[in-house]
Amino acid sequence: MDAPTGGRLRRRDEILEAAAALFAEDGYRNTSMREVAAASGILGGSLYHHFPSKEAIAVELVERYQADLTRAVRDSGAAGPGSAGPDPVAALRSFARDIAEVSSRHRAALQISMYEAPATAGPGLKTVIRAQPASLDRHWRALISAAVSAGAIDPRVDDRVLRHVLRCMTLQVGVMAWERGAPAGGARAVADCTTSIIFDGLAATGAL
Image (tube, rainbow, N blue to C red; front, side):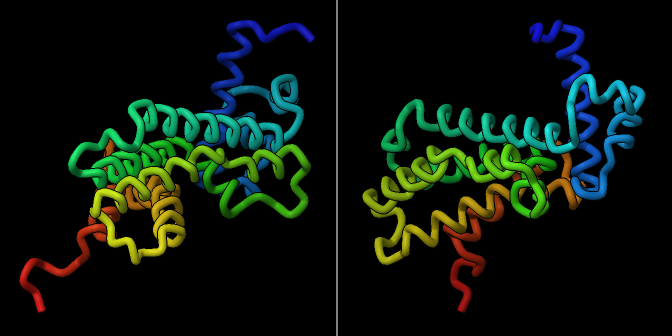
């Protein structure tokens, strides 16, 4: 098969963008290929020249989401978790913001991955959904370990629970920000709020 031309690649991107907006708004299972075609400004039959099925669209959206997560881990880890200086919690907060921002850009893929993947999904979609980058969990573990070693986190805290809370929270923050109509940068602001609750608590200084 010939490699896609520049125009064909642009059209695929437009279809993916239109499909992602529909999936995020109406749900993957509730969106038809005809609706994706209409939102993309093409005929239903033409859509199949680009994607053989709705599941193929979902697979590519989730793959792009996974790739962005991997890039966020790579960019965060470029300097190493030990480079956070005297405040390693700052590295945790920064990484939480980065992952929240990724989730806000990939709301449809996140919803498909976490909530909507149908039981009848084919092996391609099932495989990509299960393929969350192992580097993501490893990086959370490294950042938390650095903070514990520096005395910034009580060593009695179960790092597995903290890692799970941070990972789930940051993956869903983008959806939370979007659902509440947050402005640009809202995902990062929500991540800051939630990590502040985790690390600083809710009570005001001096409160009983």
